[in-house]
Image (cartoon, rainbow over all chains, first blue to last red; front, side, top):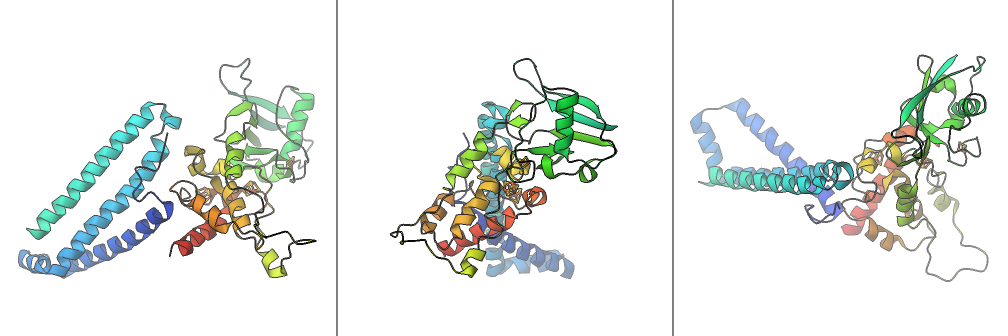
Length: 119
Length: 235
Ligand code: SF4
Ligand code: SF4
Ligand code: FES
């Protein structure tokens, strides 16, 4: 059976709110990056840029937002299409595998971002 | 001659559903789709099975998928339904078929039951009736007119995938009908039951429901109001 245990925050409202807030953060970050790309893309200017603490924090925030946003979205997709109702018992196994794979990937990405930006 | 293609399935004799074609003489009249079904049943094949009752868009029993769009057969004129002289009629999508065009509505009604579609008021009943101002009464317009035909819920992908967890547009429209009623005092309990990731929040605002409702109602808007109430309750 499809349950809410693996949802991001267990309540529909928080998931929905988090989805909205993280999309604003992501939009702001991508606009910021696009603006910087337009300004200059050489090594020193990017190093200077990412040496600033606020840029690091902003980047980390964007990475966390991306992870939360993706998880909520993917969770909806998995619980729509990979279910016992549509695929039989194998649906449950498949859904769990996909959820494991997706969560693992997202955790690795966030750690990776931390390593790159803060090292 | 109008070419009609009907979904047929009798679980007692058929291994699988199939489409059966009929040529129907409408004598050039702009009949309703239900009239065509009646003609087929009377003159071609008496075993064709469907639900109908009022034949005027009031009872909600003949919701069907007509040329790919859900609607009530009795108030869908051929002039608006037929494309290239062809009429394809299937049962409402997403629900188990009992026979031909008749579907099992149990899941749909179970979701309706979940929203406790009746007035709840903890205060002692007054001698005559609970009064409402005209403004309070106006809050129920566009909500109370629903005839539970299921055209909306069975056109909603979120309801197809999770008909046991997502209440669906019809149920949610009625949930809001009682949330919006000034005489109902169970608002908090009602909202508490809706705040899981499935009941309300599986709606992704695709508006298929609005597109098909034969009564011109707007479940998506009602769902937005419920979301707003959940939001202000939490903040
Ligand atoms: S909202 Fe409209 S389409 Fe949905 S059940 Fe009610 S009358 Fe039918
Ligand atoms: S707007 Fe919501 S309830 Fe209506 S069809 Fe789309 S997902 Fe379903
Ligand atoms: S027969 Fe009653 S709504 Fe069509």
